[in-house]
Amino acid sequence: MGEEWIKHESWELVDEASDACGRDVAQLLLKADADELKQTRNSQLTTFVLSMVILDAVERTGVAPNFTAGHSLGEYSALCASGALSFEDAVRLVSERGEAMQVAADEQDGSMAAVLGLDDDLVVSACARVDGDVWVANYNAPGQVVIAGDPAALTDAGEKAKELGAKRSMALPVGGAFHTPFMAPARDRLRKALAEVEVRDPAIPVFANVDAISRDSAEEWPQLLASQLCSPVQWRQTLYAMQELGCATFVELGPGTVLTGMAKRTLKDVNTLSVATPEDVDTLLTAVTDLGSSSQGAKEAGEYLYVTERLVVSPCAGIFAPDPRVTLDKVIKVGDIVGWVNDEEVRSPFAGLLMEFMALDSERVTARQPIAWLRTK
Image (cartoon, rainbow, N blue to C red; front, side):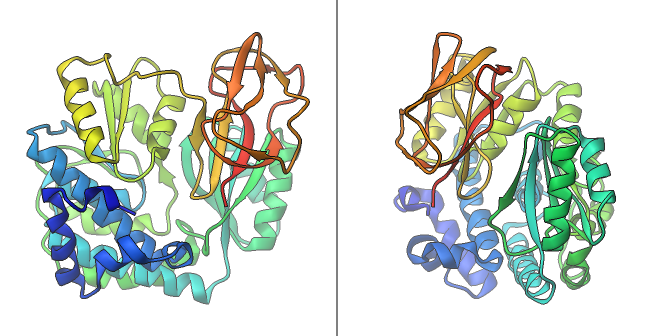
């Protein structure tokens, strides 16, 4: 994770992060195995530090944002980008946040699932109709809502959601019910850490996860960051709010392209770009110089849903027909055809195991509607 950045000047932040939190961040980034990185105490720290390496590389080019926002953990990167948090303080907070959430998850059994193809209010209704603790945790994009809570209640809510019209409820490979009341012990612990750092007024608007409102006062952010742990992430609402204020280009900084996919799914008539490698920084510079030449890019056929989950999506609107040679549990390679929409091939941009078709034979689909669900590991 992050190997492509080792020789970049911005990699020096990794050593600074290790000094700030007392952990060997370089070892985690470069040598930790998949099981280690799945632990939230490790995944949060490595994801944040690598995102900040990328932010530093972008800032060295002179490119700066007009607005910032971050999904869950990404809120700390957004606050650093705005000048509200120093890098060292943010590293210490993220390290404490990850540890606190790990302890809370170990003490309270919980999990998460993505509900696809159902309106927000009906997902809320599905959660309310079951016995047990389950809540909405993320409003990610239209037709993509994450729920979390007690595993048994989570399963029941997923079944209720399908009864109400959801296309699928997909269990996510996480070890806790994040952004729910199950994280109350972590919230209380994080509040103490937040009281020990200096938060400054952001130099540019930063949109808060808990209510999708931009905040420019330092006094508000400690409470917002603490509340976020037990509150649903209002990401779709945040994207709408940013667009309403004139945001026309959305750039994702960090490993992966999950948020880029959400922006494409949520907003019309915007430019999107993800920056994850040094080469992507060059692409960003080209896009800033000539918006539209690279930010729209080629037509994509997939989205990252979670660490191991991938969605192959329709490249256009039309009638879907699956490839009869593609069956469940088949190993799909990058570029394999999984079906057609009208006469246009639907090719997978991912390699993985086919878990399920998410569109029926002869179903009328919309552009970027999920067609197939793959699991990479």
